[in-house]
Image (tube, rainbow, N blue to C red; front, side):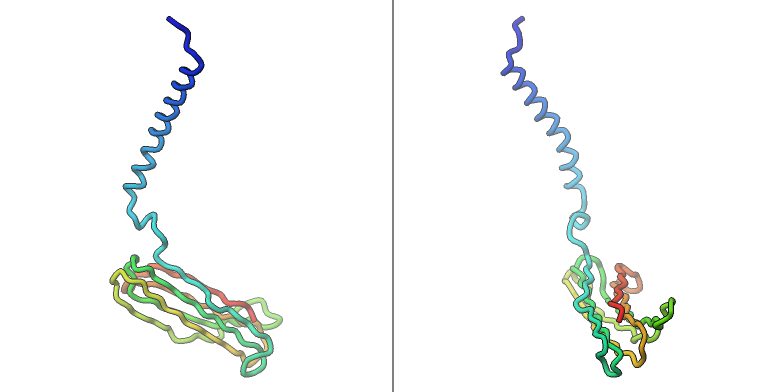
Amino acid sequence: MGAVTPSALGTRIEGLVRNRFALLALPVLLLCLLLPAQAIAAPSFSVTVERDTCVAGAGKYGFGQGVLRVRIIEYGKSGANRFTFTAQVWHLSIRGSTWTKEYQWPLYETTFPNNNQSYYSSRQYAYAPNHNAYHKIVVRVRALNGDTVLHSKLIQGKTC
């Protein structure tokens, strides 16, 4: 029997490394093929704040004005067929420590077909208080299929 030369030993080690890598890569490849495309695809919804401003001293009464504009997008794969926006103004007195609800806009709702197309809705809320206190606009955006909530997000605007 002859001795193993360094070049032959290197070739054997390289072959073993390739075989081990192939054995490790095979389960990962199978897992990627078995996962549904939706599980590894982009999200079904996005909610963004398009505008969030607070201007001190502005507004109808001179006590500032807050504006909050929110957009929701459904990318056509969630089964949603309706968006709702619930918006409120919360109040904190200058020397207070508890936020209380001061005003609530009527529920805004929009419907659309569940047909694998993308849909969006955008709403803007503005509030100018008639007294000196801290205020913020709060919006809850929901995507639903019938009465089933598929996505919900709470957005709090800047405190004025």
